[in-house]
Image (cartoon, rainbow over all chains, first blue to last red; front, side, top):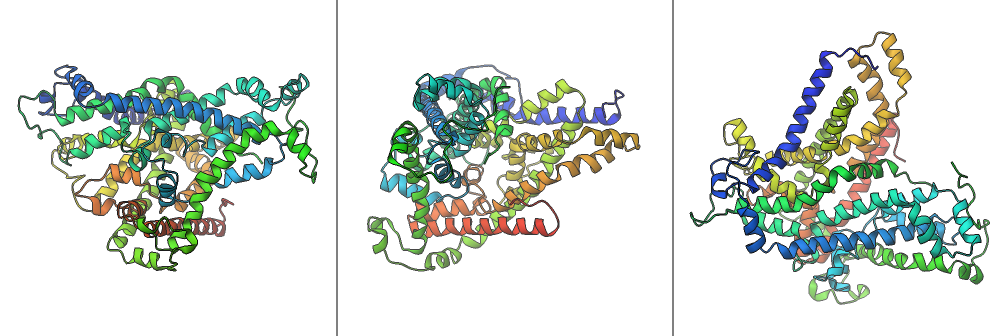
Length: 288
Length: 315
């Protein structure tokens, strides 16, 4: 298969993937360029990837006047707290369910796994959270309903299953209780899988939009703020809707700057952590 | 490697009674798991119990009455849903978008994976793959904002075409194609991962043997690579057919606008409109239940058909 001689097909493939790279990256670069371009200059033509008239006025406006600081901190708080709490709870539960000698090993595992396949659906969940538990517009609504993703729990559990059991036995002989075994022996060994699920939780929290939309419109996140900005503009390109010719920013420029602010954390961490993302995809095999 | 985990510590013998002393011995394990059991019951099982609302009349005013005292209305909510003026169009949209999505999405991911697998420049291959699943990690809100620049009137696509195509402002199923194209752009690289890992499992000896027998590259793809990932394709197809009615509301809502809304409405969104916007909880739940029940039926049906034509089944 590894014929060293390259055929026309090899070069066709290179062209094909250059094209793929181009259509994947162009939209992002376009957004970045518009956000850093003079807003009135952008009105002429929006198809460029290098700012024609470089300015940071759009960002200045967004941070000073467009009420973005609050949502930004809300997004950060939700991501940090949600990830920390999620990782601790998930790994703790995963450890107990990895113990074959635990009396409720089978029944508890089943209880969680079933929820991967059946769910109550949107309306019953909405009523439970809003009408029964009264969590609407409280910060905890971002954390509690989605506390544990069963898929992540299974990832950690499979990882613990692969660790040598002798370590736990040794700790037990030294007089450690089950809680101590979990956080002193198991947790330090689980770093790779913990990194993977932490990323899943963090990306999930940062990107989530429906939770704000359904339960907490008074606690807007960055994603929700961007949605609001978008829905104010019509389906026309919002370039000509400037009310004032002398105004330095346009709705489009604001939208682009906010889009960049909401995307940057993902793009910045992406190159460093993408191997963990994909790790989870192939790690996840449900055992017994 | 160290000792494999064949025997866990304190392995419980089959049939051993749950005694108080055993529970006491495992008190830490209980303390570490019981809170989450309570959580899963509250947040996952109580909503399941909420399905009973589909057979009752539940409005905000009557929500406080206990479940057993609410009027039982049989299948009235379902009939009301089917007779809704939006229902027919919603079903057409849901099925139309799903079929397009499954057909185009699967084909694109497979072609992407096959081509990437054939790419011999390994550094370039790695970069391409890494970049290709970047959009998967970007939220739909951001994707929608970006898509506006490309597909709206006067956007990049219009500029390239040299004319105004009205891609996101024509009240017709054209918007289905736009949504599916955007979805493919976002998920293509990510969906290809699973096919690529299936390809990595194909025996290299097969390729060598085929080469000795004089098979060219395309014949090797056709006779070895594609049959090699066939079980994966079938399993993923069965699962996506099971999810055919569960088209997510988030993507639909974000890529929609007033002009095309007739053709972007799908069942989950419809359930939201009736159940939460109009506060007819019973009706909204009934739509959700309909969606789930038909979904499971489709899954079993697809599984059965796969079995009948001799493919690997899901279960």
